[in-house]
Image (cartoon, rainbow, N blue to C red):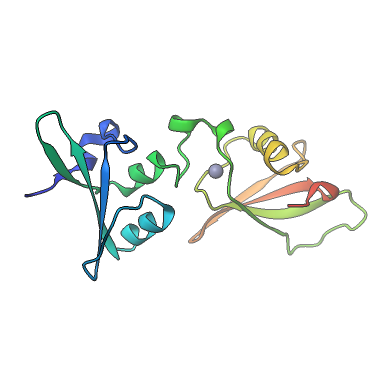
Length: 167
Ligand SMILES: [Zn+2]
C-alpha cells in the first residue's frame, strides 16, 4: 500500500484526533507509536520514518507524515500562534548574562535570550508580559532591545531587573 501524503491534506489532517494512530518505523525495523518530542527529533534527523493511519468511514488510509513542522505544531512540540495563541504557551527560554560590560549598580542586567520552542519575539511588550507571568521576570520595556540571527537561531538582548531573574 502506497502511503498518501499528510502534507497534501494540510491543516485538515487530523494530527491530534484520538483515532489517528501513529507508526514510527526506526532504521532497525523497530516499530513504535509515540508522538513525543523524541519521535519528532528522530524523524527530522532521518533516523526514523513517521506514518499515521487515519481510519476512514469505510477503510483506513496510511499517510506518510511528510510535513513534520505541521505535525510538531499540532502536538505542541513546536509553538504555533495560530493554533494555541501566545498566552497559552509556555516558552522554553534559554538565557545567560550578556558578556558585555554590566553596570553592577544598575538594578537591571543585560541578558541574552533564545527561545528553544521556536517562537520569535515580535513585540517586546507582549514578550515582557509573558515572561512576567511565566517566569516572574521584570523585563525593561522602555529601553532598546536587539536581536541577532545565527545558525543556532535568533538571540535577543534584553534588560531584566536583576532581582526578578530567579529562573
Ligand atoms: Zn515559545
